[in-house]
Amino acid sequence: MDQLKADTPAKPVILCLSSAGLALAGRLAEAIDADIHGHAVRCPDAPHHFGRAKPHIADLFCSGRPVIGICAAGILIRAVAPHLRHKSTDAPVIAVAEGGGVAVPLVGGHHGAITLARQVADAVGATLAITTAGDDRWGIPLDEPPSGWRLANKAAAQRVMPQLLAGDGAFIDGDCLDGLNDWFENVPRGNAVSLTVTRRQHTPSESELVYCPQDVMLGVGCARGCGADEVIELVMQELASADINAASVAGVFSVDLKADEPALQALAAMLAVPLRIFDRETLAAEAPRLANPSKVVEEEIGIPGVAEAAALAAAGPDGTLFHPKAKSANATMALALAPHPVAKAALGGRKPGRVILVGIGPGQAEWRTPEASRLILGADELVGYDLYIDLLGAVAAHIPRRDFKLGEEEARCRYALEAAATGKDVAVICSGDAGIYAMGALVYELLDRSQEDGGVSDAARRVEVVSAPGISALQAAAARSGAILGHDFCAISLSDLLTPWEAIEKRIHAAGAGDFVVAFYNPVSMRRRTQLAAARDILVGYRGDVPVILAANLGRPDETIRHRTLASLDIDEVDMLTTVMVGASSSRRIDLGRGSAVYTPRGYARHLDSTDTDGKAAS
Image 1 (cartoon, rainbow, N blue to C red):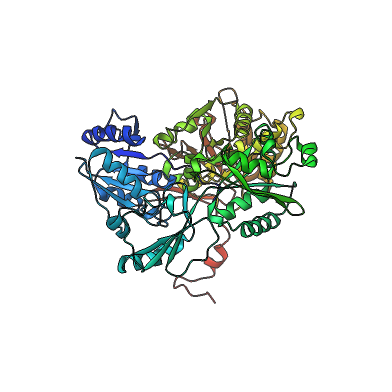
Image 2: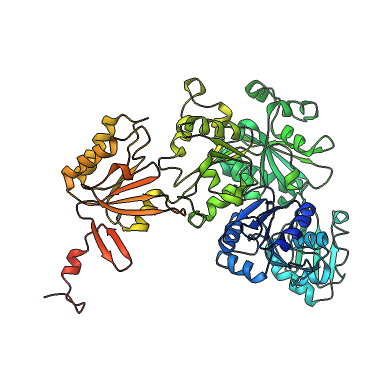
């Protein structure tokens, strides 16, 4: 499983473009628990607003949020078409007629769209228009079993389902059939294909689908740094010994001390199930039910066992330990059976926390990567400077947020790490790129210190840190103004709050001596007005009067790009939202019909100069 994805289905968004659509959206949202996004001009009473429909729909889709559009199907199709990936992963997109008469699942039929469309149709009394054959004929998607069940050989569905449609029905059997009998009610019986319901190991035939109840809880413990291969080999060996199909495993469970253990994360990814952890107090309460308590483990971490205790805790008080602890040199595992299949959202324990460093670029949604949008969607909480979170707009309006002021960077990162230590996925929202003059370095600096030395708690040090790159201000400024970064360049922050001015001054001299294009971040503030002038005077001595770009509010409605020269640079034109780009001695400004541009040649001149006007090499 992609551990970056959200473990629970994303909350749907009902999108409306008119007042009539907004009225229908209100009825629908109450029935299916969805957010309502309305056009800012046409639906001013909507809880959340957007300006341009097409990019907003695309952003929601790329984020993984199901979209229910009360609008023409063509609008939805044109918005998501460039972003389609695969039917098993694309977010559901459903078109609903403005009058509420028809609901049509357009995209994501194999990823929940059919089920969601049924809920929509039932809620507003619409006719459900389904074109997928299985749903149309039997009323169920055979490749999307009910929550808590898993199709073990899902890839075979594309081959088996046409055989069933063309044949005389299915032979349905298995030791766990009682759990899906009602679901299979309308599937005709016959011998064209086999549908087998079991938790046992089973090799399907070419015309067979195997469905497994996810009621097996896998508890795992291991020594620090144990190899993933050892853990995986132990688990697969014992699943075979117990005659348990890996598709029946609902999750991997362990103690919170193992939240950052790569081997457990690799095991969960291989099985495509969540990794969940319990605190030691919870596992200690399972001591009376353990078949193989360990004094060694108790002396080491204060509880008499991990694998059996975690499996039992996950299975619940009515669960049973049916495969006691087995071990290798450095790992242990055990299996417990829950009284019924367990949906992913209902699994016990908590997920290992994550701090997600998200660079959202300069501001506009079109410059935000799909990965960044997806990670924001999957977060339990957003943390950051309030302006940056506000830039996310309606897409993230449903996610709890914790705002911090400028100057509270340490408190911001410390809070994110400690909140993640409780099992939350906390997204730290940064403009530009999180690793460039943003919160990335500070998060790692806190992790690099012990708690006694000003760092964070041991639990916080076990959280996973994920970073999504963003478009930096220097990239945006260069793109908007030509190609000033065409040759070697550097970035220098002029803020001396954390770095002594003497060190900054040395770097400016080094950049001047090296003839680098220089991107100045944090050029001025309300109280700091002298550093940029000093930097200007230093660089003039090295390169003369070169082109300068002043780029402000990049990617936002009030974006401005101004062309100046180094000698004429007026400090009063610059504020904290301006990125100052100073050209190298070779940088050139050219005036074209559509405006000015600055570029820095990389050295192709000698090739151009050696070619005549006919494109032939000069003699």
